[in-house]
Image 1: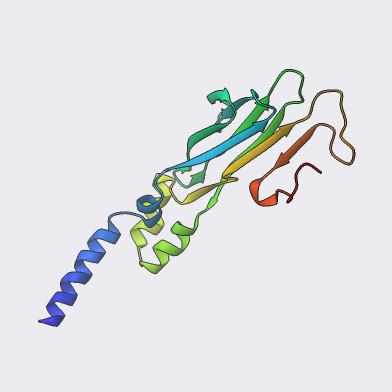
Image 2: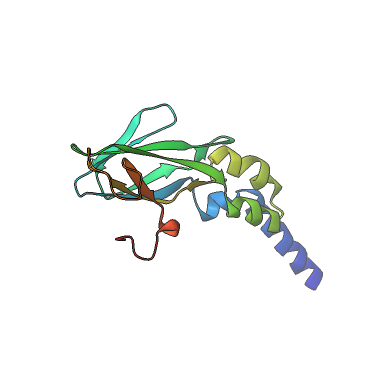
Length: 163
């Protein structure tokens, strides 16, 4: 009797796990990217792989972007502009995600590994997930810093950014 239940459980697990990819189930095909900029009122425009503007709003912006397409990661160019300031551009692009790599491996999900997650694009994680840009005023230089642009990613922020 125990073997019958074990066999039924294994068949049910294989039917569930084989029908979808781990990354597709857990993360989905879109990812939220948060973009903030200083000074206030800076215009944020996000361009897709083809150079088409997909969103244009004042910062801060939280945008839901596709992780990628069939077997290829997405790449987005984020342009931040404000009159009187030097424009800045940051690129966010996909890299292989943990749920795709580890999740499908631990669940022995061959269908998810080779078909579902690659076709849905859920196998990719966009990096960076958050962008913080400080635009430099045109015609000014800050001592010891790049006169045109300062881009700070959250994990690289110094303890006291005012110094």
